[in-house]
Length: 241
Image (tube, rainbow, N blue to C red; front, side, top):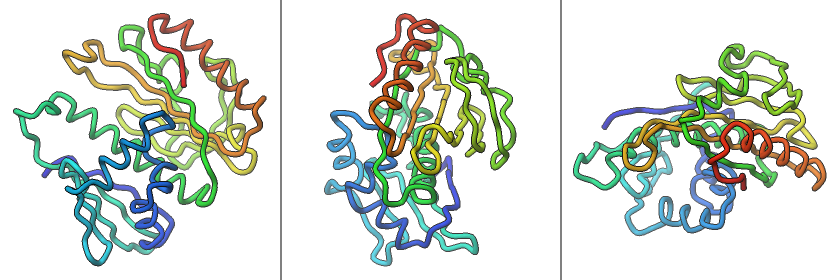
């Protein structure tokens, strides 16, 4: 097994386990809101191939990737260990994409538990082709401070946002955003995606915005700003949803 991914969440292990084993809770951090989210969650976390450790410290999901939970002084370390790559599998070309997806979703799990454990998120999502350039660079996010540090900046969308850097990796940036929640913060994740020869020959980028308790007008304003930016910078991309 390779590509270990982990986060430390300021919650106890039973709380984390609940977020992994109740479909409605998984929907607050896995992926983004879409018509097929419920069926995807069922397939990955709740089908007949899924194996739960009896002491609730490990969960092997469909496809063989394994979550492990380990109590640490600051909460619970949650790790995902990728199953060994089958080079003959139809998913082989998507292996790095899946790894990057787990990184995103682990950070969304940490955010949901630490910041909004009882709230419902509303998401805005879109992806763009790599031929238009890195979304991280176009949005002005390449040089944000270190994780945990405060930031304040004007996005390429024209929005003035502020909060803290939630995480940074080689290909992803996560920011808490004060204006994306009525109470506390929302979360903005921008990820540059790897090349997949037959499906994504130029690579690409995706944006996931998690908002909380915003009114319809505020949410629509955010959605419009992002969709206008998407259409201007990546005219061949699909509208946000």
